[in-house]
Image (cartoon, rainbow, N blue to C red):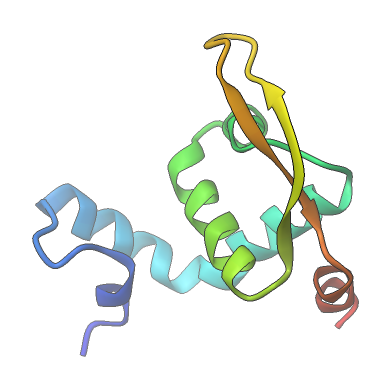
Length: 102
């Protein structure tokens, strides 16, 4: 079975499938990048896009890290400057800090 299958939708376009295949071998590396970013302080998803240059892959990894309990919603909201909308402020959890030390 293609390991990238878990990274794209069942009805994915060919470009989504290609992106999932390109990312699959680097998944742990990208998750670690996001976790290191989170360790620097609270952040919003749009900041991942600014920092890494492309947000979709890193936002998805943030969501995976959230599901693992390594990143959590801080309960705070902050305005995104370019849109004026409120966004979740994410923070690293103690478990996330522990995972970085391993």
